Structure formats: structure tokens, C-alpha cells
Length: 322
Image (cartoon, rainbow, N blue to C red; front, side, top):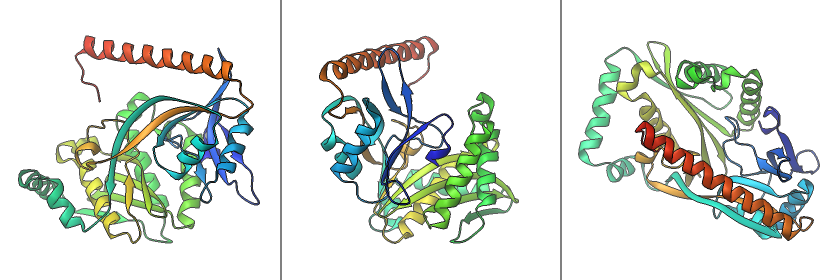
């Protein structure tokens, strides 16, 4: 999937057959030379992919292959790959620290539902599901091992393109290269048993779709798409609950990462656990302290300016930050 990111460079530590460690990055040249993990609809985290438990030596090799500082976005703190990168870096500087929603998968789904929502909220969720079922024949499909992935991907792409992302031109379907990357990436992961996909249909028409990637004890949500025509019935929330129940039934999974932006207005109210993430600049010994410090000062000023402009825009437009 990373290899298909349009315009990205796949920075990797080679191994026999497959890379041991790889991340999609973009080269920046002005006013300083550096690389930045590329956040796209296909790669919404800067965490490098590892074929096995990464070592400090692997991380050193990755930093040295860049020969410039690398800005890693949205690294989960305490993750083995994050720890290896921090241990390998000659220079490091934290730009930002924030939290995103997660789910600790312990106990049963029913117990979680009881503890996570009060009686009023559970009653409301049940009412919404019942009212949605009254609109037609409601069916939720789970992608089966070895099953046909095609209809699930098509449903997801069509739903996303029909929504606000399609109107803004930022839906995956707007870029054939992203479509190819999603299809090929998920197909390969499906063959190895690492993809879970859920689709909700009303009278045979998809109204919500969501996928997740499974890696050992950890699940990571991909993108979610839903038909905004049915927004008053919260199909996005309904498909999240379907996925949550399925993850509780998934043998071996202990943590689910929402992969969401900070303070996401929907998932934050459903998954109450949190993962601390960091944006951090790392560099190997070939980068001098002077050039590294110059870059981090520039990035710090850039971040502060962006934050100020965003707060000003939200205040002038009367919008809430999310």
C-alpha cells in the first residue's frame, strides 16, 4: 500500500525478499533539507511498517538511508517501532504530543457496552438501530477469510465519494493512483489474513463500510464511510459498534487503534481509551547538531503559526475545533 502512495518515496531497510522496515516519505528542500512521513488516505500514520520486531540497528539503518532528518507524524508512544527509532536517533526533538481514541479489548462486548455507556445512551443506540431497521431490510456483512474483497472495497469507495470528501475532491476515488494503492494493498493483506471489513446494507444498497488491519495483538482501523442520507440514524456509529463487537470476538487481539485525528467528534465518544501519539524529528549521526537545531526551530515556528491561523479562523467563523 505504501509503495502506491502517489509521489512518495518508499524509504526502507532492505532484507531478503521484503524490507524489514519501511515508511512512505516526502522529500522537502526549502529552507532545510529533510524528509517527512507522508500522511495520505492510504498512510494516515507515520509509523514505519516492520516485517518483524524492529531492532535499534534496523532503525539506525533507516535514519542513515535518509541522510537527512525525518519528521515522523503520529507515532504511538511506547510502540516497539517508536522505541527503536528513538533509541537509534542521534538527535531528536518532539514537535507535538496528543491523544487519539483506542479500545482495550478485554472481557466481553456486552460488559464493555454496559460499562461504556449509561442506560440512556444504550437505549438511544438501540432505538436508532431499530428505526434504521424499519426503513428496509438491514444486513451487515463481514468479509470472510478467502472471501471476495471486491464488493467491500467498491462499497467503501462509492460511499466516500458520495459524501463530503467527494464534494471537496479529497475522496480516494478522485485519484486513480490512490484507488489502485488501496485495492492492491488490501488485496495483499487479505491474502495473508490481515484484513477485516464490515459493510452495512439497506435493501441491498451499502450505507456504511469500515475496514481494519490486524497485526498480531493489535488492530488498526482504516477509513470509515457512510451514506449521509441516513445520517439521522447514525450509520457510522452503527458500523463502529459492529466492528467493536467483532474485535471482542477476535482471538488474540488486545488493543484496537482508531487511527483517528485528535478529539475526533464521533470515535472519541465511543472508544474511551487513549493512545498517546507524538510528532517527532529524528536524525542519525550524519546530520550535524547545528543543521538539526535550525530545522527544529523552523518547524516549531511553522507549527505555532499554523495553530494561530487555525484558532483565528475558527473564532472568526464561529466554528468549534474538532
